[in-house]
Each structure stands twice: as structure tokens, then as C-alpha cells.
Image (cartoon, rainbow, N blue to C red; front, side, top):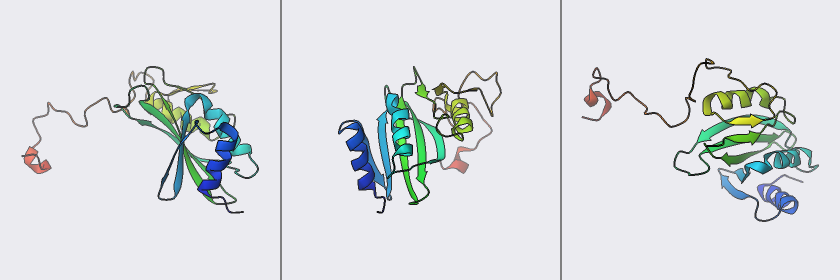
Length: 168
């Protein structure tokens, strides 16, 4: 049986109920969003289910949505079923005031470094991570550079010619 987006949605609804997820499809890639408290339960189900078998974590990253009050940060998991060559995107949102999500390192060993990188750049705390510390930035940094909290360019610079950038 071919693994389709409709079948994946059906299996998730059977397991977790109707109201748990938000589903979207973009260019054939299924995206599901669940509450952050459910991330490990959903990941375990997607991994263990005999029909789904999403056992490869392709990528894990963060996204900052500064205008979404209460869910400013998202953790994005890209999962792959190697047998059916099927991919899905799974998201959980968290508040910038309490940026905590359970770690996936117990399920995917590769999540270790990806979670450290996501912590380093977005400040998302992965609860239960075996060694959550900065991996690319210096330890003395007191901010997270990929959050959209800073202007893209220095407004005080006088050595730029605005006409060269289409602003004059």
C-alpha cells in the first residue's frame, strides 16, 4: 500500500483524535501542527507505527514568528519514511517567554546536534537534552541571533548610498 497524505492524516486522527492537529499540504508535502506537550507522543507514534515508519529525522530547526503572540517560536521536524520515500513536516509552537520543548534525542540520535544548534540560534530549551549548550556561537552571547528581534542593517551607518539599494 502506498503511503499517502490522506492515510497519514487518518492514522493520526485514529490515534490522537480529531482536534489535536492542524493539517496543511504544500507542494505535496504534508505539514502537521500539534501542541508542544504532544511532540514526543506524536514523534514516537510516527516512528513506531507499522504502516507509517517515519524513522529518519532529516532536519530539525526553529522559526521565529514575532507577531504570533504566545507561539512566537516553532520547532520544525522534517521526517522521512525511507521505505515509501515519503516525507512530512511536523511543527510545534512555543512561547518566547517559556521556550521549552521535550527533546527528541531518545528517539533520533541525530537530533542531538540539531537541537543544540536550534538552541544556540533561537534559544529554544530542549527539556531532557543530554548536553544542551552552545555549539556554534560563543558562550558569552546573551542573545539568540536568528530571532527577528534586531534590524537587518545598522540604521546609523553613514557610508551607505541609499540610491545604490533602490531607496533613494
